[in-house]
Picture 1 (cartoon, rainbow, N blue to C red):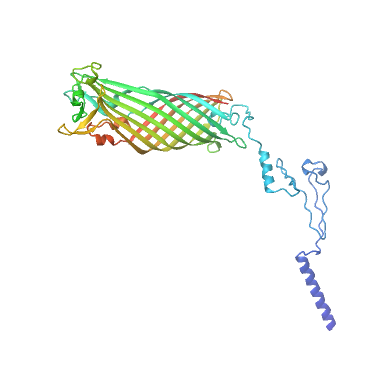
Picture 2: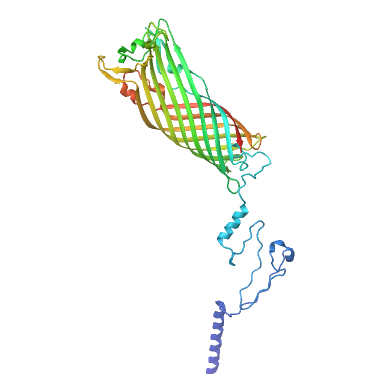
Length: 454
């Protein structure tokens, strides 16, 4: 009986030991024999090119003492095939990345040949010509500043005749030059660097005012002198008052452009613009008069001039975009807004002088003590915002040539304008020295141009 129990316990121990040994698949442990998988792919393995040397028959699987072999997996169509390491090792991450890069292909600056002109950066085909340039003609006008009354009929102050806003200004004509280069990457989605300069020739305006019996000014010249003569002698009871205005504009930009940012707006290609800009608005306003009993040109010493020359120099950064529609019969609509923040360095010079060159000065109430001399020069730095928007149509004449026509609007805040520097009391030199910089400038007009890729 004891022997029977001993044999039963032995049998149970052996049974549990063999189960634990197989559970952890230790070396030499038997495992269940696997049947070969059915090869039902619908093609002959020996003739399929993507197998890259795979055996024509299904592999067998060892049933004891070795890991089971796995069936070969096919690479997706078009995927790069991992290459063995030159030293005999398996493919690593670097070699895989190089394989993907080579599959992308080189930059094709000169090999892109679209069937039709492509609508892309600056209206020219992408990558076909890395360099681009354009020239154009601009005509623009400006809005009017706050008016300053300068003339009325002598003896009737209520009969105001003219102010600085009455000066007739021509539309300014100028030109624009652009040039730059694209820097293509894989897939021809380039960056571009662009330089822009546009300007207009000085725009001049003139206005003469006469009345019967004569003309006088509401501006107070009573405490001013030129070579001992009161300024009122020149501006009260004059035969004629005259106003002159001169405007000059210069614009320089250097922009970085990221092109082919498609998908933001359906059927439109949006290109982002980031750059630096310098904008100068130079204005000169002169109010002249001739002494009673004289006419213009009779004697330079009988002519007097109050003049203000102010320059706005804006330097700052801007951001914007250029959105272009799909091409339609080689025509393409576009809109390009930009806005930036700027430091405006303003230079102002106010002068009061006679036609023979004698300079004026201010005196106190008794007329004997000199309070200060003209010209009065001052500078100031102020914060300005400048925005520009272009809109129009491109015509893609050929793969290398395109033409454009459009409308441009430029507006700036925090500007010093010459009209705002004219004071009622001309002898108030400390106030003249303080620049009034809360003016706004608006320019608008049309432009046409041609662009070429080379």
